[in-house]
Length: 179
Image (cartoon, rainbow, N blue to C red):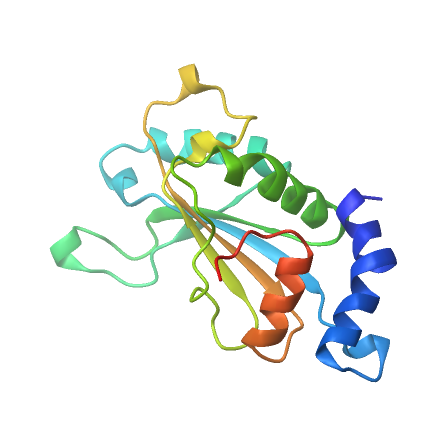
């Protein structure tokens, strides 16, 4: 079992319950899934970007990504319905906690001029989205094999009822959110 998972159940769960004033342990918010999404709009011109993106996301998450396709045609962007334009991975369980541990412990401290994550990236229901400008902050990525720097969105989905509960959960779990 992951260090972060055991730490959540042994340490953080009781502290969060007390801090939020919840009567039942089952009311305490917890992470349900982490979704990593990489939009590859340039793949319309260069189809090799999808393959390299799949390989990089597989290395980062340890799971096979799925290809997302365009839902409708947009002529201004030369986009047709059904054309692959992105990739995503949804992680749950121990793989989710392992990824979260690597994100908090290794990847985020490697971001240049990092002063913490913005506090306004909550969605109103306790879920948090992080936008990264480059995939190089993950130590698993080999710098020499990259042909194009691509960003990604990481969404942490929780069972929290509101942003306050989500913020409490994620700060106790080590996510560096600015005050």
